[in-house]
Image 1 (tube, helix red, strand yellow):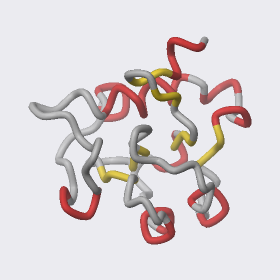
Image 2 (cartoon, rainbow, N blue to C red; image 1 turned 135 degrees about the vertical axis):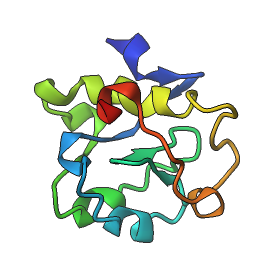
Image 3 (cartoon, rainbow, N blue to C red; image 1 turned 60 degrees about the vertical axis):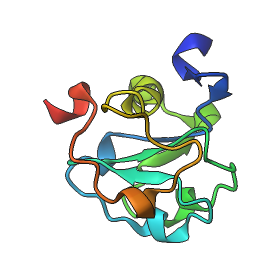
Image 4 (cartoon, rainbow, N blue to C red; image 1 turned 30 degrees about the horizontal axis):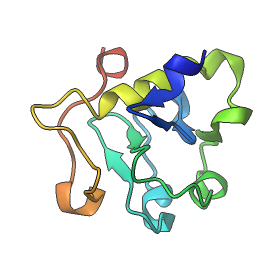
Length: 115
């Protein structure tokens, strides 16, 4: 559903899914030129407003956890919403503009991941 892919007015272009939970290889963070991949406690999240949609994160993920939203498997569709909502959960919104390296590990996850 389109409304599940929207964060503000920005579509979630790339989505990190279940395979990242408790693994967090971080190859994607090293590859990302926009520094838009943030580290929660149990998984990584792509900030949709910072992502430049280069796609460099997707092929370097050894867990095959990152998908372009158009290629997202049906059983992982809810991670579009999880990725977008993560950036609104803290006391201050993350990103736009920002940078994951400045922030470091965030210290929480989306409730559906942290459970």
